[in-house]
Each structure stands twice: as C-alpha cells, then as structure tokens.
Length: 251
Image (cartoon, rainbow, N blue to C red; front, side):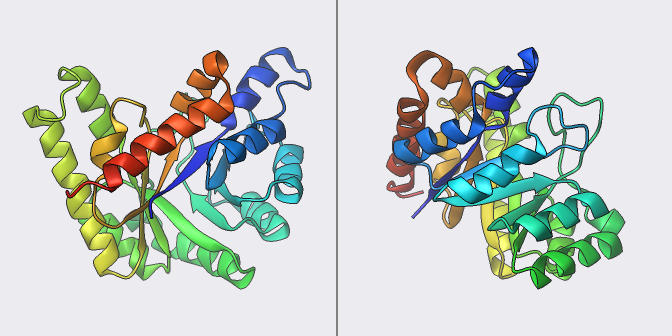
C-alpha cells in the first residue's frame, strides 16, 4: 500500500520569518497524522534556515508515526541522527545558496564517504535512504554503498508537467515518467525500496502514485501551501486520497 510522508519544513519557515514560537512544527505533525500521513519528514539543514535541532528532538519524542530525517552526509548530521534515531535518514545534497534541494545526490562521486555514513547509521539501527536522480549508475552506486531505500527525484517530471500544458500525455512529460518508471524498476531489482518525491502536488501526483512498487511519496510544499488555506488535516487527507485512488488503478 502506498504511503505518504509529509514534509513540514515550511511550517518552520513561516515561524522563522518572525523568529517566534508559532506555528509549531510538532503541532503540524500531529495534524498531518490525523489527516492520514504515514510519516513526517524534516530537513535539518546545516544553516538551520527552518527546522531547528529542538524541533527534531521534540518530533522524535512526541509524534506517533515514523520520522524521516533529511540531512547532508556530514559528521555533525550523522551524529545527530545516531543520537535521535529517526526511523529513516535520507542523505541529500545541500547548498547554502539554494532555495530548495536542487538535483539528486551524486553517489558515484563520493561512494566511500557515503558508505561510511550509511554504516554508522545502520549501526544505530537507522534505515538509510538516498535522494537521487532517475539515473542507473546512481542507483547501482546506491546499492553498493548499502542504501536500503532510493528516493527518486521527481522534480524534472514536475517541471515538465508544469511547462507543457499540465498534461500527463505530453511527450516531454511521458519521457520523464518513463525515466522514473525505469529507475523504480532498477531500484526494486537491486533489492532496495522505491520511494519518490520533490515538487509533487495535487495536480501531478497521480501518474507517480500509479507506478508499480512505489512505496512512499514525500510531499511538503504543496501540502503546507494548501494547509494555510484549508488546514493541515484536510490538505493531507486530499493528497492521500489522490495517491490511493491512483495506486488502485492498473498502470
């Protein structure tokens, strides 16, 4: 059954805009859970631009669904993850100047360092995931370093969808979907879990949710944006409904 991980980073972005105490990401996580979320995702960035260390600690202590900690593969972040023990740690690329994560992690170029980080996380009982582009050499490298999950970057698909008529049947969109489908097959053939995410929203999610074997979608900005208008429970519930509806149809 396909699952939804809700990224609540931008609840903290709103709070940090005023350097105050509200809205509280932990409250948002509870509301997301009540709306049907299967997990909560947060990215503890090195510059602490939104989620703070105390947010992650409180989420670990107070939420009742699984926690996915997005993080750079630095000694500091690995140590934090090993101390807090989220259910999953997802290694992502990180740039100080980027607005959001731009592109997948280059596993091929840094296999040794990433393998060491994954071994430390595994020793702490944490499932390791890597956020990568839909590229076979990166998937094969992920398997070599011991990643148990590959989250395939859906940003290129989402941008093609937006730029080519919001039409899942356009040639540009079909080409991106074919890449993700092939990547998902390769991930599963290599014995890893196939997750997907980035820039998914209420209009483009269903073609991804329909793929065979996709286990989780991680979605944040679209859900938080809608939650500002309708509330977190309803925003999460509608996304979950769309995903389950698509997953129930033959691909």
